[in-house]
Length: 638
Image 1 (cartoon, rainbow, N blue to C red):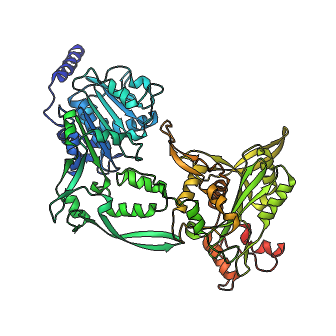
Image 2 (tube, rainbow, N blue to C red):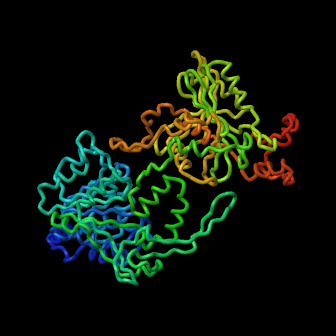
Image 3 (tube, rainbow, N blue to C red):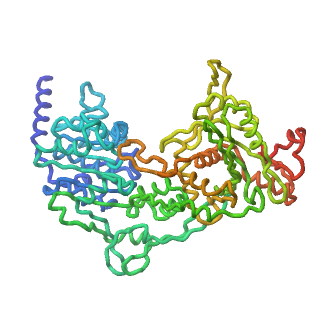
Protein backbone atom coordinates (compact mmCIF):
# COMPACT_ATOMS: atom_id res chain seq x y z
CA UNK A 1 0.00 0.00 0.00
CA UNK A 2 2.84 2.36 0.89
CA UNK A 3 4.61 1.52 -2.35
CA UNK A 4 1.44 2.25 -4.34
CA UNK A 5 1.00 5.62 -2.60
CA UNK A 6 4.61 6.58 -3.32
CA UNK A 7 4.23 5.55 -6.97
CA UNK A 8 1.03 7.59 -7.33
CA UNK A 9 2.72 10.63 -5.77
CA UNK A 10 5.63 10.24 -8.20
CA UNK A 11 3.30 10.01 -11.17
CA UNK A 12 1.40 13.11 -10.02
CA UNK A 13 4.64 15.09 -9.90
CA UNK A 14 5.65 13.85 -13.34
CA UNK A 15 2.25 14.65 -14.84
CA UNK A 16 2.23 18.07 -13.14
CA UNK A 17 5.56 18.82 -14.80
CA UNK A 18 4.15 17.77 -18.19
CA UNK A 19 1.06 19.95 -17.83
CA UNK A 20 1.17 22.84 -20.32
CA UNK A 21 1.02 26.37 -18.88
CA UNK A 22 -2.24 28.25 -18.81
CA UNK A 23 -2.88 30.77 -21.57
CA UNK A 24 -2.36 33.75 -19.28
CA UNK A 25 -0.46 37.02 -19.34
CA UNK A 26 1.23 38.23 -16.18
CA UNK A 27 -1.65 40.58 -15.34
CA UNK A 28 -4.29 37.87 -15.88
CA UNK A 29 -2.22 35.39 -13.87
CA UNK A 30 -1.99 37.88 -11.01
CA UNK A 31 -5.74 38.47 -11.04
CA UNK A 32 -6.43 34.72 -11.00
CA UNK A 33 -3.77 33.44 -8.61
CA UNK A 34 -2.10 36.27 -6.68
CA UNK A 35 -3.01 36.88 -3.06
CA UNK A 36 -1.60 40.00 -1.37
CA UNK A 37 -0.17 39.34 2.08
CA UNK A 38 -1.34 41.22 5.14
CA UNK A 39 2.15 42.22 6.31
CA UNK A 40 3.11 43.85 3.01
CA UNK A 41 -0.09 45.20 1.44
CA UNK A 42 -2.43 48.04 2.39
CA UNK A 43 -5.29 46.00 0.90
CA UNK A 44 -4.58 42.28 1.51
CA UNK A 45 -6.46 39.68 -0.44
CA UNK A 46 -7.07 39.01 -4.12
CA UNK A 47 -5.05 41.04 -6.60
CA UNK A 48 -7.21 43.44 -8.64
CA UNK A 49 -5.80 45.03 -11.78
CA UNK A 50 -8.27 47.91 -11.60
CA UNK A 51 -6.54 49.20 -8.46
CA UNK A 52 -3.31 49.74 -10.40
CA UNK A 53 -4.32 50.01 -14.07
CA UNK A 54 -0.96 51.56 -14.93
CA UNK A 55 0.80 48.26 -14.03
CA UNK A 56 -1.16 46.14 -16.50
CA UNK A 57 0.85 47.09 -19.59
CA UNK A 58 4.31 46.82 -17.98
CA UNK A 59 3.35 43.38 -16.65
CA UNK A 60 2.02 42.18 -19.98
CA UNK A 61 5.07 43.52 -21.81
CA UNK A 62 6.84 40.60 -20.17
CA UNK A 63 4.77 38.23 -22.35
CA UNK A 64 5.64 40.06 -25.58
CA UNK A 65 8.21 37.89 -27.42
CA UNK A 66 9.66 41.03 -29.05
CA UNK A 67 10.46 42.63 -25.69
CA UNK A 68 13.65 41.44 -24.02
CA UNK A 69 14.04 44.21 -21.45
CA UNK A 70 11.60 46.21 -19.30
CA UNK A 71 12.62 49.34 -17.39
CA UNK A 72 10.45 50.99 -14.75
CA UNK A 73 11.29 54.26 -12.99
CA UNK A 74 8.76 54.70 -10.21
CA UNK A 75 7.98 56.70 -7.11
CA UNK A 76 7.01 54.99 -3.87
CA UNK A 77 3.51 53.61 -3.22
CA UNK A 78 2.65 52.95 -6.85
CA UNK A 79 3.15 49.18 -6.71
CA UNK A 80 6.57 48.75 -8.33
CA UNK A 81 7.48 45.94 -5.93
CA UNK A 82 4.23 44.15 -6.76
CA UNK A 83 5.06 44.49 -10.45
CA UNK A 84 8.25 42.55 -9.74
CA UNK A 85 6.52 40.03 -7.49
CA UNK A 86 3.74 39.29 -9.99
CA UNK A 87 6.28 38.72 -12.73
CA UNK A 88 8.40 36.39 -10.59
CA UNK A 89 5.29 34.51 -9.46
CA UNK A 90 4.22 34.10 -13.09
CA UNK A 91 7.64 32.68 -14.03
CA UNK A 92 7.61 30.12 -11.20
CA UNK A 93 4.08 29.00 -11.99
CA UNK A 94 3.79 29.33 -15.77
CA UNK A 95 7.13 29.71 -17.56
CA UNK A 96 9.85 28.39 -15.26
CA UNK A 97 13.49 29.18 -15.68
CA UNK A 98 16.32 30.28 -13.41
CA UNK A 99 16.07 33.83 -12.04
CA UNK A 100 18.84 36.11 -10.81
CA UNK A 101 17.40 38.89 -8.64
CA UNK A 102 20.01 41.58 -7.84
CA UNK A 103 19.66 44.19 -5.06
CA UNK A 104 21.95 47.02 -3.95
CA UNK A 105 23.39 44.97 -1.06
CA UNK A 106 23.11 41.44 0.28
CA UNK A 107 21.22 42.80 3.29
CA UNK A 108 18.64 44.33 0.92
CA UNK A 109 18.34 40.96 -0.84
CA UNK A 110 17.71 39.15 2.46
CA UNK A 111 15.12 41.71 3.56
CA UNK A 112 13.27 41.49 0.24
CA UNK A 113 13.26 37.70 0.39
CA UNK A 114 11.84 37.64 3.91
CA UNK A 115 9.38 40.54 3.56
CA UNK A 116 8.19 40.11 -0.05
CA UNK A 117 9.03 36.75 -1.63
CA UNK A 118 8.33 34.47 1.34
CA UNK A 119 4.83 35.89 2.09
CA UNK A 120 3.90 35.78 -1.60
CA UNK A 121 4.88 32.10 -1.88
CA UNK A 122 3.10 31.28 1.38
CA UNK A 123 -0.20 32.96 0.45
CA UNK A 124 -0.44 31.91 -3.23
CA UNK A 125 -1.48 28.22 -3.46
CA UNK A 126 -0.06 27.84 -6.97
CA UNK A 127 3.36 28.93 -5.69
CA UNK A 128 3.43 27.24 -2.28
CA UNK A 129 2.84 23.92 -4.01
CA UNK A 130 5.93 24.40 -6.20
CA UNK A 131 8.49 26.11 -3.98
CA UNK A 132 9.88 23.66 -1.44
CA UNK A 133 8.82 24.13 2.17
CA UNK A 134 11.45 26.15 4.03
CA UNK A 135 11.52 23.82 7.03
CA UNK A 136 12.06 20.55 5.15
CA UNK A 137 15.51 18.99 5.15
CA UNK A 138 17.61 19.91 2.12
CA UNK A 139 14.56 21.74 0.74
CA UNK A 140 16.46 24.12 -1.48
CA UNK A 141 14.46 26.97 0.07
CA UNK A 142 16.83 29.33 1.84
CA UNK A 143 16.72 33.09 2.30
CA UNK A 144 18.81 33.78 -0.81
CA UNK A 145 17.92 30.75 -2.92
CA UNK A 146 14.60 29.08 -3.69
CA UNK A 147 14.15 26.09 -5.98
CA UNK A 148 11.04 25.12 -7.93
CA UNK A 149 10.36 22.75 -10.85
CA UNK A 150 12.34 24.07 -13.81
CA UNK A 151 14.44 26.70 -12.10
CA UNK A 152 16.11 28.42 -9.15
CA UNK A 153 15.51 31.93 -7.78
CA UNK A 154 18.81 33.39 -6.59
CA UNK A 155 18.96 36.73 -4.75
CA UNK A 156 22.22 38.63 -4.25
CA UNK A 157 23.80 42.05 -3.76
CA UNK A 158 25.32 44.14 -6.54
CA UNK A 159 28.84 43.72 -5.12
CA UNK A 160 28.84 39.92 -5.45
CA UNK A 161 30.79 39.38 -8.65
CA UNK A 162 30.82 35.59 -8.26
CA UNK A 163 27.01 35.47 -8.26
CA UNK A 164 26.76 37.84 -11.22
CA UNK A 165 29.25 36.19 -13.54
CA UNK A 166 28.94 32.41 -13.08
CA UNK A 167 26.34 30.13 -14.68
CA UNK A 168 23.78 31.00 -17.40
CA UNK A 169 20.51 32.62 -16.31
CA UNK A 170 17.34 33.14 -18.35
CA UNK A 171 15.72 35.87 -16.24
CA UNK A 172 17.48 38.83 -14.62
CA UNK A 173 15.78 41.28 -12.26
CA UNK A 174 17.34 44.38 -10.75
CA UNK A 175 15.75 46.34 -7.91
CA UNK A 176 16.70 49.92 -6.90
CA UNK A 177 19.28 50.19 -9.67
CA UNK A 178 20.32 53.71 -8.66
CA UNK A 179 21.64 52.39 -5.35
CA UNK A 180 23.85 49.67 -6.84
CA UNK A 181 27.60 49.53 -6.57
CA UNK A 182 29.40 51.04 -9.55
CA UNK A 183 31.51 47.89 -9.84
CA UNK A 184 31.11 44.30 -8.65
CA UNK A 185 34.49 44.00 -7.02
CA UNK A 186 37.07 44.55 -9.75
CA UNK A 187 34.93 43.02 -12.50
CA UNK A 188 32.99 46.06 -13.69
CA UNK A 189 29.36 47.12 -14.07
CA UNK A 190 27.06 44.73 -12.11
CA UNK A 191 24.16 45.11 -14.55
CA UNK A 192 26.41 44.35 -17.50
CA UNK A 193 27.73 41.23 -15.73
CA UNK A 194 24.19 40.05 -14.97
CA UNK A 195 22.96 40.64 -18.52
CA UNK A 196 25.95 38.74 -19.92
CA UNK A 197 24.62 35.57 -18.27
CA UNK A 198 21.60 35.61 -20.62
CA UNK A 199 23.56 35.27 -23.84
CA UNK A 200 22.69 31.62 -24.48
CA UNK A 201 18.91 32.15 -24.07
CA UNK A 202 16.92 33.22 -27.13
CA UNK A 203 13.93 33.90 -24.85
CA UNK A 204 15.75 35.77 -22.08
CA UNK A 205 14.05 38.62 -20.22
CA UNK A 206 15.51 41.41 -18.08
CA UNK A 207 13.61 43.71 -15.73
CA UNK A 208 15.15 46.68 -13.91
CA UNK A 209 13.28 48.90 -11.47
CA UNK A 210 14.28 51.88 -9.34
CA UNK A 211 13.21 55.09 -7.71
CA UNK A 212 15.05 57.96 -9.44
CA UNK A 213 17.84 59.70 -7.53
CA UNK A 214 20.21 62.45 -8.69
CA UNK A 215 20.36 64.08 -12.10
CA UNK A 216 23.53 63.09 -13.94
CA UNK A 217 24.14 60.09 -11.68
CA UNK A 218 21.09 57.87 -12.26
CA UNK A 219 21.67 54.54 -14.06
CA UNK A 220 17.93 53.83 -14.19
CA UNK A 221 17.42 57.09 -16.10
CA UNK A 222 20.03 56.02 -18.65
CA UNK A 223 18.19 52.72 -19.09
CA UNK A 224 14.85 54.53 -19.40
CA UNK A 225 16.25 56.68 -22.19
CA UNK A 226 17.29 53.53 -24.10
CA UNK A 227 13.68 52.34 -24.15
CA UNK A 228 10.32 53.58 -25.38
CA UNK A 229 10.22 56.32 -22.68
CA UNK A 230 6.53 55.91 -21.84
CA UNK A 231 4.65 58.18 -19.41
CA UNK A 232 1.23 57.52 -17.86
CA UNK A 233 -1.04 60.27 -19.15
CA UNK A 234 -4.54 61.09 -17.97
CA UNK A 235 -7.28 62.64 -20.06
CA UNK A 236 -8.45 66.13 -19.16
CA UNK A 237 -12.26 66.04 -18.70
CA UNK A 238 -12.51 69.51 -20.24
CA UNK A 239 -10.38 69.46 -23.41
CA UNK A 240 -9.89 65.70 -23.86
CA UNK A 241 -6.10 65.95 -24.18
CA UNK A 242 -3.83 63.46 -22.40
CA UNK A 243 -1.11 64.78 -20.06
CA UNK A 244 1.08 63.34 -17.34
CA UNK A 245 0.01 64.64 -13.93
CA UNK A 246 3.12 66.29 -12.47
CA UNK A 247 3.83 68.61 -9.55
CA UNK A 248 4.20 71.63 -11.84
CA UNK A 249 0.48 71.38 -12.68
CA UNK A 250 -0.76 70.91 -9.11
CA UNK A 251 -2.20 73.95 -7.33
CA UNK A 252 -2.94 74.03 -3.62
CA UNK A 253 -4.04 76.35 -0.84
CA UNK A 254 -2.84 76.01 2.72
CA UNK A 255 -2.95 77.53 6.17
CA UNK A 256 0.12 78.08 8.32
CA UNK A 257 -0.10 78.38 12.11
CA UNK A 258 2.38 78.58 14.93
CA UNK A 259 2.30 75.93 17.66
CA UNK A 260 4.99 76.14 20.36
CA UNK A 261 6.99 78.30 17.97
CA UNK A 262 6.91 75.59 15.34
CA UNK A 263 5.31 76.07 11.94
CA UNK A 264 2.34 73.76 11.36
CA UNK A 265 0.79 73.43 7.91
CA UNK A 266 -2.71 72.42 6.88
CA UNK A 267 -3.56 71.90 3.21
CA UNK A 268 -7.10 73.12 2.59
CA UNK A 269 -7.51 72.62 -1.16
CA UNK A 270 -5.67 70.78 -3.93
CA UNK A 271 -6.52 70.66 -7.60
CA UNK A 272 -5.02 69.93 -11.03
CA UNK A 273 -4.63 72.56 -13.75
CA UNK A 274 -4.54 71.14 -17.27
CA UNK A 275 -1.45 72.42 -19.11
CA UNK A 276 -3.40 72.30 -22.36
CA UNK A 277 -6.57 74.26 -21.62
CA UNK A 278 -5.94 75.67 -18.16
CA UNK A 279 -9.15 74.19 -16.70
CA UNK A 280 -9.05 72.82 -13.14
CA UNK A 281 -10.14 69.39 -11.88
CA UNK A 282 -10.16 67.77 -8.46
CA UNK A 283 -8.17 64.70 -7.44
CA UNK A 284 -11.05 62.20 -7.50
CA UNK A 285 -12.06 63.25 -11.00
CA UNK A 286 -8.53 62.92 -12.38
CA UNK A 287 -7.93 59.54 -10.77
CA UNK A 288 -11.12 58.24 -12.43
CA UNK A 289 -10.35 59.67 -15.86
CA UNK A 290 -9.22 57.45 -18.76
CA UNK A 291 -5.44 57.15 -18.85
CA UNK A 292 -2.88 55.42 -21.03
CA UNK A 293 0.84 54.95 -21.63
CA UNK A 294 2.23 57.28 -24.29
CA UNK A 295 5.72 56.66 -25.70
CA UNK A 296 8.12 59.50 -26.45
CA UNK A 297 10.55 57.11 -28.16
CA UNK A 298 8.40 54.39 -29.78
CA UNK A 299 11.22 53.33 -32.11
CA UNK A 300 12.99 51.64 -29.17
CA UNK A 301 10.35 48.91 -29.31
CA UNK A 302 12.20 47.59 -32.34
CA UNK A 303 15.25 47.16 -30.10
CA UNK A 304 13.22 45.13 -27.62
CA UNK A 305 13.25 47.70 -24.79
CA UNK A 306 10.12 49.14 -23.20
CA UNK A 307 10.55 51.74 -20.47
CA UNK A 308 7.97 53.30 -18.14
CA UNK A 309 8.04 56.28 -15.72
CA UNK A 310 5.52 56.67 -12.86
CA UNK A 311 4.98 59.23 -10.10
CA UNK A 312 2.85 59.09 -6.95
CA UNK A 313 0.07 61.35 -8.26
CA UNK A 314 -1.59 58.29 -9.80
CA UNK A 315 -1.38 56.19 -6.63
CA UNK A 316 -4.60 55.09 -4.94
CA UNK A 317 -2.77 55.11 -1.60
CA UNK A 318 -1.20 58.55 -1.75
CA UNK A 319 -3.50 61.58 -1.59
CA UNK A 320 -2.59 64.87 -3.24
CA UNK A 321 -3.21 66.60 0.08
CA UNK A 322 -0.52 64.45 1.75
CA UNK A 323 1.85 65.16 -1.16
CA UNK A 324 1.42 68.93 -0.83
CA UNK A 325 1.88 68.64 2.93
CA UNK A 326 5.12 66.67 2.47
CA UNK A 327 6.39 69.39 0.15
CA UNK A 328 5.57 72.17 2.64
CA UNK A 329 7.21 70.31 5.52
CA UNK A 330 10.39 69.70 3.50
CA UNK A 331 10.95 73.34 2.59
CA UNK A 332 14.30 74.64 3.81
CA UNK A 333 15.82 71.15 4.16
CA UNK A 334 17.41 69.86 0.96
CA UNK A 335 17.66 66.28 2.22
CA UNK A 336 13.96 66.11 2.97
CA UNK A 337 13.16 67.84 -0.30
CA UNK A 338 15.23 65.31 -2.26
CA UNK A 339 13.17 62.51 -0.69
CA UNK A 340 9.98 64.28 -1.81
CA UNK A 341 11.30 64.72 -5.35
CA UNK A 342 12.54 61.13 -5.68
CA UNK A 343 9.91 59.09 -3.85
CA UNK A 344 6.77 61.18 -4.46
CA UNK A 345 7.22 63.41 -7.49
CA UNK A 346 9.18 60.62 -9.18
CA UNK A 347 11.68 63.21 -10.35
CA UNK A 348 15.44 63.41 -10.39
CA UNK A 349 16.98 65.67 -7.78
CA UNK A 350 19.34 68.33 -9.02
CA UNK A 351 21.72 70.09 -6.63
CA UNK A 352 21.19 73.49 -8.15
CA UNK A 353 24.04 75.23 -6.37
CA UNK A 354 21.85 78.29 -5.84
CA UNK A 355 23.91 79.67 -2.94
CA UNK A 356 25.02 83.24 -3.00
CA UNK A 357 28.75 83.86 -3.38
CA UNK A 358 30.93 85.68 -0.85
CA UNK A 359 30.07 89.05 -2.37
CA UNK A 360 26.34 88.39 -2.10
CA UNK A 361 26.64 87.46 1.58
CA UNK A 362 28.79 90.51 2.23
CA UNK A 363 26.01 92.68 0.87
CA UNK A 364 23.55 90.96 3.23
CA UNK A 365 25.36 92.18 6.35
CA UNK A 366 23.43 94.51 8.60
CA UNK A 367 24.08 97.03 11.36
CA UNK A 368 23.31 95.51 14.75
CA UNK A 369 21.97 98.05 17.30
CA UNK A 370 24.04 96.25 19.97
CA UNK A 371 26.07 93.07 20.43
CA UNK A 372 22.81 91.10 20.60
CA UNK A 373 19.96 91.94 18.20
CA UNK A 374 16.36 91.33 19.19
CA UNK A 375 15.34 87.73 18.55
CA UNK A 376 18.43 86.10 20.06
CA UNK A 377 17.46 83.70 22.86
CA UNK A 378 20.49 81.43 23.25
CA UNK A 379 24.22 81.78 22.58
CA UNK A 380 26.52 78.90 21.66
CA UNK A 381 30.16 78.79 20.61
CA UNK A 382 32.03 76.59 18.15
CA UNK A 383 35.82 76.29 18.49
CA UNK A 384 38.20 74.86 15.89
CA UNK A 385 41.60 73.62 17.09
CA UNK A 386 44.75 74.24 15.05
CA UNK A 387 48.38 73.64 16.00
CA UNK A 388 49.12 77.36 16.41
CA UNK A 389 45.73 78.86 17.30
CA UNK A 390 42.10 78.48 18.24
CA UNK A 391 39.38 79.90 16.02
CA UNK A 392 35.90 80.42 17.40
CA UNK A 393 32.50 81.83 16.57
CA UNK A 394 29.72 82.84 18.96
CA UNK A 395 26.30 82.35 17.35
CA UNK A 396 22.91 83.57 18.54
CA UNK A 397 19.85 81.39 18.03
CA UNK A 398 16.14 82.19 18.01
CA UNK A 399 12.84 80.61 17.05
CA UNK A 400 12.43 78.75 13.74
CA UNK A 401 16.19 78.24 13.22
CA UNK A 402 16.81 81.96 12.76
CA UNK A 403 20.42 82.74 13.70
CA UNK A 404 22.77 85.69 14.19
CA UNK A 405 26.55 85.81 13.88
CA UNK A 406 27.68 87.47 17.13
CA UNK A 407 31.48 87.27 17.22
CA UNK A 408 34.19 85.61 15.14
CA UNK A 409 37.67 85.53 16.65
CA UNK A 410 41.12 83.95 16.68
CA UNK A 411 43.29 83.18 19.72
CA UNK A 412 46.90 82.77 18.67
CA UNK A 413 49.13 80.23 20.43
CA UNK A 414 49.49 76.49 20.94
CA UNK A 415 46.44 74.70 22.36
CA UNK A 416 48.54 73.39 25.27
CA UNK A 417 49.36 76.94 26.38
CA UNK A 418 47.76 78.30 29.56
CA UNK A 419 47.64 81.78 27.99
CA UNK A 420 45.51 80.47 25.13
CA UNK A 421 43.04 78.86 27.51
CA UNK A 422 42.89 81.96 29.67
CA UNK A 423 41.92 83.96 26.58
CA UNK A 424 39.28 81.37 25.72
CA UNK A 425 37.92 81.61 29.26
CA UNK A 426 37.38 85.32 28.69
CA UNK A 427 35.23 84.50 25.65
CA UNK A 428 33.23 81.80 27.45
CA UNK A 429 32.59 84.05 30.45
CA UNK A 430 31.76 87.22 28.54
CA UNK A 431 28.33 88.80 28.88
CA UNK A 432 26.94 89.83 25.47
CA UNK A 433 24.32 92.56 25.79
CA UNK A 434 21.16 93.74 24.06
CA UNK A 435 20.54 97.41 23.34
CA UNK A 436 18.70 97.83 26.65
CA UNK A 437 21.64 96.45 28.63
CA UNK A 438 20.20 93.02 29.32
CA UNK A 439 22.84 90.34 28.75
CA UNK A 440 23.39 86.69 27.91
CA UNK A 441 26.34 84.40 28.37
CA UNK A 442 27.21 81.41 26.19
CA UNK A 443 25.04 78.43 27.14
CA UNK A 444 27.16 75.65 25.60
CA UNK A 445 30.37 75.36 23.56
CA UNK A 446 31.69 72.59 21.34
CA UNK A 447 35.44 72.35 20.74
CA UNK A 448 37.18 70.20 18.16
CA UNK A 449 39.58 67.76 19.81
CA UNK A 450 41.27 66.85 16.51
CA UNK A 451 44.86 67.57 15.57
CA UNK A 452 47.94 67.00 17.69
CA UNK A 453 46.52 68.12 21.05
CA UNK A 454 43.62 65.72 21.57
CA UNK A 455 44.46 64.73 25.13
CA UNK A 456 45.23 68.31 26.21
CA UNK A 457 41.89 69.48 24.79
CA UNK A 458 40.08 66.70 26.65
CA UNK A 459 41.77 67.60 29.93
CA UNK A 460 41.00 71.33 29.59
CA UNK A 461 37.39 70.63 28.65
CA UNK A 462 36.96 68.46 31.75
CA UNK A 463 38.27 71.32 33.86
CA UNK A 464 35.63 73.59 32.29
CA UNK A 465 32.61 71.33 32.59
CA UNK A 466 30.98 74.08 34.66
CA UNK A 467 31.23 76.39 31.66
CA UNK A 468 29.56 73.68 29.56
CA UNK A 469 32.57 73.34 27.27
CA UNK A 470 32.65 69.91 25.61
CA UNK A 471 35.10 68.34 23.20
CA UNK A 472 33.69 66.94 20.00
CA UNK A 473 34.78 64.54 17.28
CA UNK A 474 33.56 65.07 13.75
CA UNK A 475 32.10 61.95 12.08
CA UNK A 476 31.86 61.86 8.30
CA UNK A 477 29.16 60.16 6.25
CA UNK A 478 25.66 61.06 5.07
CA UNK A 479 24.05 58.58 7.46
CA UNK A 480 25.67 60.04 10.58
CA UNK A 481 23.20 61.84 12.88
CA UNK A 482 24.03 65.48 13.52
CA UNK A 483 24.28 64.97 17.29
CA UNK A 484 24.32 61.91 19.53
CA UNK A 485 24.41 61.45 23.31
CA UNK A 486 27.90 62.15 24.71
CA UNK A 487 30.38 59.41 25.53
CA UNK A 488 33.03 59.19 28.23
CA UNK A 489 36.56 59.25 26.81
CA UNK A 490 39.88 58.56 28.53
CA UNK A 491 42.40 61.33 29.11
CA UNK A 492 45.96 60.01 28.76
CA UNK A 493 48.92 62.40 28.87
CA UNK A 494 52.54 61.17 28.87
CA UNK A 495 51.26 57.64 29.43
CA UNK A 496 49.32 58.56 32.58
CA UNK A 497 45.58 58.03 32.77
CA UNK A 498 44.18 61.27 34.22
CA UNK A 499 40.48 60.45 34.16
CA UNK A 500 37.59 60.87 31.75
CA UNK A 501 35.81 63.63 29.87
CA UNK A 502 32.54 63.87 27.94
CA UNK A 503 32.83 63.81 24.15
CA UNK A 504 30.06 64.54 21.63
CA UNK A 505 30.27 62.94 18.20
CA UNK A 506 28.65 65.07 15.51
CA UNK A 507 27.73 64.30 11.92
CA UNK A 508 29.63 67.09 10.19
CA UNK A 509 28.14 66.30 6.77
CA UNK A 510 24.60 66.76 8.10
CA UNK A 511 25.71 69.98 9.77
CA UNK A 512 27.22 71.43 6.61
CA UNK A 513 24.06 70.67 4.67
CA UNK A 514 22.06 72.41 7.40
CA UNK A 515 24.22 75.52 7.05
CA UNK A 516 23.90 75.61 3.27
CA UNK A 517 20.14 75.17 3.48
CA UNK A 518 19.89 78.13 5.86
CA UNK A 519 22.10 80.33 3.65
CA UNK A 520 19.60 79.78 0.83
CA UNK A 521 16.90 81.60 2.82
CA UNK A 522 16.70 85.09 1.32
CA UNK A 523 14.43 87.02 3.69
CA UNK A 524 14.79 87.65 7.47
CA UNK A 525 12.59 85.30 9.44
CA UNK A 526 12.49 81.51 9.88
CA UNK A 527 15.81 79.90 8.91
CA UNK A 528 17.51 83.17 7.98
CA UNK A 529 21.20 83.77 8.84
CA UNK A 530 22.03 87.32 10.00
CA UNK A 531 25.57 88.70 9.88
CA UNK A 532 26.86 91.96 11.36
CA UNK A 533 28.58 94.62 9.28
CA UNK A 534 31.96 94.37 11.03
CA UNK A 535 35.54 93.47 10.21
CA UNK A 536 35.34 90.02 11.84
CA UNK A 537 32.59 89.21 9.33
CA UNK A 538 34.48 90.37 6.28
CA UNK A 539 35.41 88.73 2.99
CA UNK A 540 37.66 86.18 4.69
CA UNK A 541 34.85 84.98 6.91
CA UNK A 542 32.49 84.30 4.00
CA UNK A 543 35.24 82.72 1.91
CA UNK A 544 35.67 80.21 4.74
CA UNK A 545 31.93 79.74 5.26
CA UNK A 546 31.53 78.87 1.55
CA UNK A 547 34.78 76.91 1.32
CA UNK A 548 33.22 73.49 0.57
CA UNK A 549 30.64 72.02 -1.76
CA UNK A 550 29.06 68.65 -2.40
CA UNK A 551 30.77 66.51 -5.05
CA UNK A 552 29.48 63.22 -6.44
CA UNK A 553 32.00 60.37 -6.33
CA UNK A 554 30.73 57.54 -8.54
CA UNK A 555 33.33 55.16 -7.07
CA UNK A 556 31.82 55.34 -3.59
CA UNK A 557 29.16 52.75 -2.78
CA UNK A 558 27.51 53.92 0.44
CA UNK A 559 28.20 57.66 0.42
CA UNK A 560 28.72 58.95 -3.13
CA UNK A 561 28.08 62.58 -2.15
CA UNK A 562 31.05 64.10 -0.30
CA UNK A 563 31.98 67.55 0.92
CA UNK A 564 35.19 68.81 -0.68
CA UNK A 565 37.06 72.09 -0.49
CA UNK A 566 36.52 74.39 -3.45
CA UNK A 567 39.79 75.22 -5.23
CA UNK A 568 41.07 78.53 -3.90
CA UNK A 569 39.14 78.10 -0.62
CA UNK A 570 41.58 76.06 1.45
CA UNK A 571 40.64 77.72 4.76
CA UNK A 572 37.47 76.11 6.11
CA UNK A 573 37.78 76.93 9.81
CA UNK A 574 34.86 79.37 9.60
CA UNK A 575 32.58 76.63 8.28
CA UNK A 576 33.72 74.27 11.03
CA UNK A 577 33.17 76.84 13.79
CA UNK A 578 29.63 77.56 12.61
CA UNK A 579 28.99 73.82 12.33
CA UNK A 580 30.14 73.17 15.90
CA UNK A 581 28.15 76.12 17.29
CA UNK A 582 24.97 74.87 15.57
CA UNK A 583 25.58 71.36 16.90
CA UNK A 584 25.94 72.74 20.43
CA UNK A 585 22.58 74.47 20.07
CA UNK A 586 20.97 71.25 18.84
CA UNK A 587 22.44 69.23 21.72
CA UNK A 588 21.54 71.85 24.35
CA UNK A 589 18.49 71.07 26.52
CA UNK A 590 16.36 74.17 26.04
CA UNK A 591 12.90 75.61 26.24
CA UNK A 592 12.89 78.65 23.94
CA UNK A 593 9.44 79.71 25.11
CA UNK A 594 10.57 79.77 28.75
CA UNK A 595 13.72 81.71 27.80
CA UNK A 596 11.63 84.22 25.88
CA UNK A 597 9.32 84.68 28.90
CA UNK A 598 12.33 85.28 31.17
CA UNK A 599 13.73 87.91 28.86
CA UNK A 600 10.37 89.65 28.66
CA UNK A 601 9.99 89.48 32.43
CA UNK A 602 13.47 90.90 32.94
CA UNK A 603 12.42 93.85 30.79
CA UNK A 604 9.31 94.39 32.91
CA UNK A 605 6.88 93.29 30.21
CA UNK A 606 5.70 90.18 32.03
CA UNK A 607 5.51 88.90 35.57
CA UNK A 608 8.21 86.37 36.27
CA UNK A 609 6.61 82.92 36.30
CA UNK A 610 7.78 79.65 37.74
CA UNK A 611 7.28 77.45 34.71
CA UNK A 612 9.68 74.49 34.58
CA UNK A 613 12.83 75.32 32.70
CA UNK A 614 12.57 79.10 33.18
CA UNK A 615 15.93 80.84 33.18
CA UNK A 616 16.94 84.43 33.72
CA UNK A 617 19.19 86.80 31.85
CA UNK A 618 22.11 88.87 33.09
CA UNK A 619 20.81 92.35 34.03
CA UNK A 620 22.43 95.55 32.89
CA UNK A 621 24.02 95.98 36.31
CA UNK A 622 26.59 93.62 37.77
CA UNK A 623 25.82 89.89 37.54
CA UNK A 624 23.69 88.47 40.34
CA UNK A 625 25.57 87.04 43.34
CA UNK A 626 25.95 83.29 43.59
CA UNK A 627 23.37 83.01 46.35
CA UNK A 628 20.72 84.31 43.96
CA UNK A 629 21.94 82.01 41.21
CA UNK A 630 21.00 78.99 43.26
CA UNK A 631 17.41 80.19 43.57
CA UNK A 632 16.90 81.34 39.97
CA UNK A 633 19.25 79.81 37.35
CA UNK A 634 20.57 82.40 34.95
CA UNK A 635 20.21 82.43 31.19
CA UNK A 636 23.90 81.86 30.62
CA UNK A 637 23.88 78.71 32.71
CA UNK A 638 21.46 76.96 30.41
